[in-house]
Image (cartoon, protein in one colour):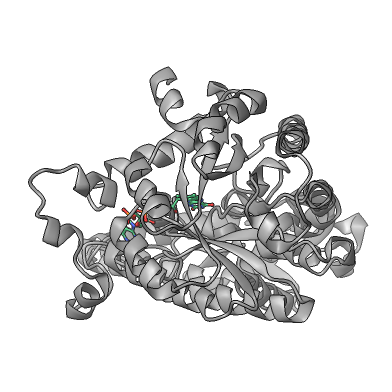
Length: 505
Ligand SMILES: Cc1cc2nc3c(=O)[nH]c(=O)nc-3n(C[C@H](O)[C@H](O)[C@H](O)COP(=O)(O)OP(=O)(O)OC[C@H]3O[C@@H](n4cnc5c(N)ncnc54)[C@H](O)[C@@H]3O)c2cc1C
């Protein structure tokens, strides 16, 4: 950890990092300091990370001194901060949007005001795909905030591996037009690729949020670069990559307009020296700052990236790889592909090949999914839910009826259930004994297809089956208390699926 930490972390404290940055600063590099830490688990963690960001902002301001002029050029020539929103709140999830608007946006705003006063840039890092829309809803009010007007230092990272990169740039352009801002956009390829693939499979999504071939990400990067460069009125482009081909292609596309390149501390020193010395373009170094305790998530991303055999850095270090292959034009390579998606990475529903279909998940972070689910649940709630024993296809009409309450709120009655009496149980056991032979006689394949069909019906009836999760007290329907016992539904599966994610990332 110490060796790797030394390679990728500029300093354990902001003061140490500023001291260590001095030699590169003298050579003309600018910095974006990242206070290591993400995915705050507790309010105390988030407070600690926020304090470190504000202290870092003060330290950078003192170190940078007063700007020569409060112009946009001067702003971009100065060093600043990069922030991960997941570090600033322990509940940084789509389900908490209203709370985040009250608690996280003010934090981000304070930091932005501090950076604006010191005339320093602030960039919001890109994190997981499921948090993209959420990050935009945190950023949008600040881009429109009159208290921050005149300071075009609030930027965002855009991931080219995301299938939403181009629509996102179009959205940002619209916000820039409406607010009269020029938004600094750091274009990256994306650091969570392996995890995004796994999460999409685990969540049973209909498709991947990211491209599945490296070459498609490379092409998307160039398309996104062009989309940024053609709108100098809206964007200050910042191209973050260690790939020499990507750097050369961007430099070719960009011409003389104002933009910068970026690299990570501890990576790409050689190629970026050429950026500064030969291309005469500015380069910013993204420099993590912090102790070993907060290093792991960042380090794992760097190790995955550098270890991947598709990575430019990895291939460059491979003496066997012909240089022509390493610098091949991604647009030509992609155009030649008969299948644009990677056939070795089947879509999440087809994960198990012909053996069985993967169960469909619910990406609840996606607003459209939430809206259609809630709509279905709303319709299901129009009708009271009733359950009763069914024996040989016939509903049993004797036996006590009980009210069933919601597992998350015992005051909410979600339906009624008729319990089987002993006559119904005897009839069911007898029928099961008779039916077992027929069921066995069907054979495994026929039984499996019946179970598959049952699974499909469960999936189709999901809003109906999930109504207890969403039922509200006002949805009760009358049932004379005296005659009814109460019991709680056991929707363990439903509850598990919809609990806030506690994945460690
Ligand atoms: C200054 C700086 C800041 C950064 N900030 C962020 C940030 O805020 N958020 C963030 O997510 N990342 C960030 N990154 C990391 C960045 O996203 C890339 O992971 C890293 O730069 C490697 O890309 P490359 O162009 O340098 O190398 P290359 O080797 O050309 O590209 C590697 C990238 O290709 C993509 N890739 C690999 N395999 C596949 C595949 N099979 N299908 C599709 N795509 C694939 C992945 O994105 C992978 O990282 C930052 C990088 C830099 C330099």
